[in-house]
Length: 167
Image (cartoon, rainbow, N blue to C red; front, top):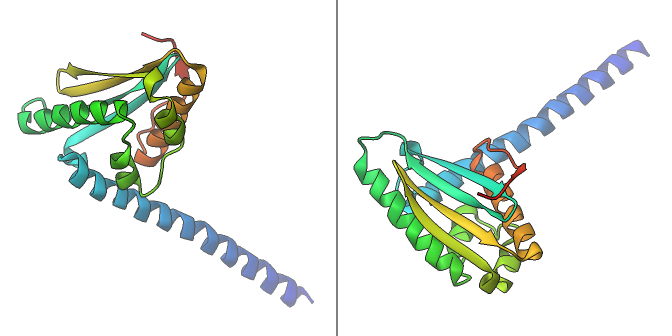
């Protein structure tokens, strides 16, 4: 009887370890795919740049910077990409994030419907750029937050999903 109990515990332990390893492997595979598709679609290497996303009371931001100040090529590619997506997003075109992530990010359908109520403003940073996303429409702001929280998780940036005051 004790042998069956021990055997049962061992089997349950193995099943638990096997189940936790599969999602971790799938997550790693997904993240590698996001990086690979992102490098191609954005025109610069994720290894040479750092993404940050933030949620603010009136929307949020996407910021990307070259890791090395002397890497002017990556800095200019980042600026070109962010200028491009600010314009595309303003038109309701989110094909690029859908391609990079392999899915429609949360918030996108609502952002497309409410595109007239959302402003996308590009500005340069020292080593790259930032797209500020703003709206006075509460439903649009909720959609922006969902979109940016997804970006934080899927890119694995570790950024906070807490909403900070608008700046």
